[in-house]
Amino acid sequence: MSIVIPTPETRMAAIREKVTAGERLSKEDGLFLYESDDLMAIGQMANEVNLRMNGRKVYFIETMSLYFTNVCEAHCRFCHFRRDPGEEGAYTLSPEEMFAYIDQHYHPGMREFHITGGHNNTVPFDYYVNYVKALKARYPDVLIKAHTAAEIEFFSRISGLSYEDVLKTLLDAGLSSLTGGGAEILSERYRKKMGVGKATTDQWLEVQRVAHGLGMKTHATMLYGGIETMEERIQHMLYLRELQDETNGFLVFIPNSVQPASVNAGIKRRVSAMDILKTTAISRLMCDNIQHIKAYFINMGTQLTQISLQMGASDVHGTIVQERISHAAGALTPEGLTRDELVFLIKGANRIPVERDTFYNELHVYE
Image 1 (tube, rainbow, N blue to C red):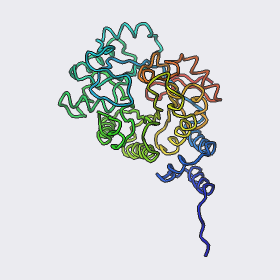
Image 2: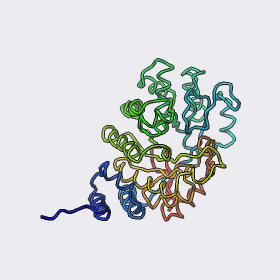
Image 3: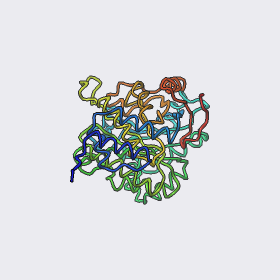
Image 4: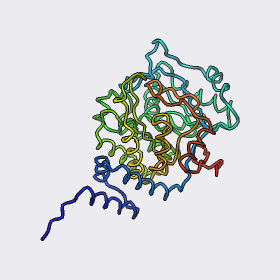
């Protein structure tokens, strides 16, 4: 009787067989892929899965990022955007103040406002509701994608309302979808060590579950490249996969690499290109029931974004106009791109650019 000892080659071959057959990868499979240095094999499998799911189409949206307040009760160690009340640089804008900024950049092709910001407990929940109402009244054709699941948990605490009632209030005001942030790494060990002073893993997932139960389609992120283990990254993906099995409410998964504390920080403090591409590909392979994986050019840069489109990604986000959170932490990438630049970027990767709305309805295909 002979004993077959698995080798990295036979293990990779077994995973490839699963991928080809459309079988689900296990936690152990995901960990093996992170341990492997065969980036090309991992990328090819992810590309195969993406082509099966989305063809050669790559999506983007005409979106504008808005930040009504940077005042925040939380003190997450990776964040350089937040301010304390009264601190230099702290701000809380009225709708009218935000209108002045929007009107400088607005054009009739704008599809979405992407709103996130601090957990500002110096203003009531009505402040957040009223600016959604004001935006919808002034720009009725623009969909409002606003607030993370962590912000919904925060609104629940300051208002005394349930997650469901918070969400219903915002939906009535004009909200269309939740943003994906606040997830960071869905691990209590990580959240405690990084001082994530906001929703727990269970709370973040429960807000998403409630939102999906109300018929909302939402987004999910992962902030990687800090102190998390590879097992925590894979578990994060599995939490999302399990919830998606239950609700089918996630539109896209966005793995975001952390940024260093300063633009002058040494290159060693940035997440490596190898890790970024591997994580993109593994995300596609593990999150097999989420239609899209986003390559976020703000965090990875435009050239790695192009490569990622051959390694499982099917979305490059959008125009943004002026991103602030990653750039406050030292991102060296553009703060936004034009529609023409996004089309050029996607075509440069031999893919078909598709302009979409928040829900991935196709608005224009650039053949």
